[in-house]
Length: 241
Image 1: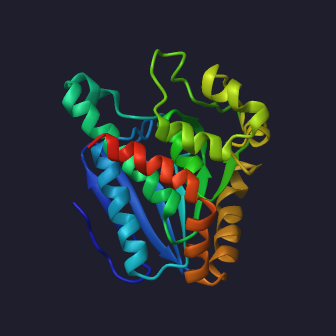
Image 2: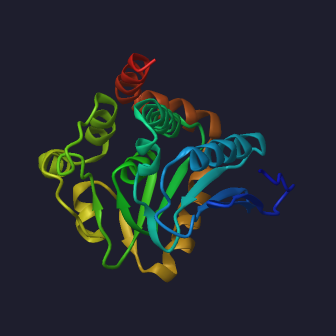
């Protein structure tokens, strides 16, 4: 259920398993994800996040901040959906991949506030954002697909290659190495890390700066800069139809 509050008032997306807050503040749309657990990427999060991205555009926001819950950005896909059967699991995965394509080509600047652990699909979401600020602490950022016996499809390889530096690509994508936030900056998961009490202010500062750039040119140049990545991602997504 979506409470579409107007202006700067928060809109709360709520069901018994998930909580999300949307706040338009100083022309910045702040999307706070918090299911009280691992912020799993399931149908509810995907519904809510896509609705929030739609709303940010409709309200002419200057930029978007995507924030996790304290200590946890996201632990990845909702494993419960896979237990329902192959068809249900594949439907969720396809929707998740559609979100990655949308974020990578989203016309507004998107700042990821990586609030803690960031695993699998959670890490891909962060990599699809434009600017990525992490929280210092004993947190793990990793792509565990090889370690848990899962394939990396071309769409995930494309987004990984676009952000992870060449020297770390094998360790990240193939060897499932676990990085702390500082190491994640060197690898390319994140752009910078700050103390937890500075995270929101730093993300707001970045979002405000990006919001001052010409919106139409930002959107157009994003598509140009990421043309090859988006082409590869979209082609793989189309093959899943």
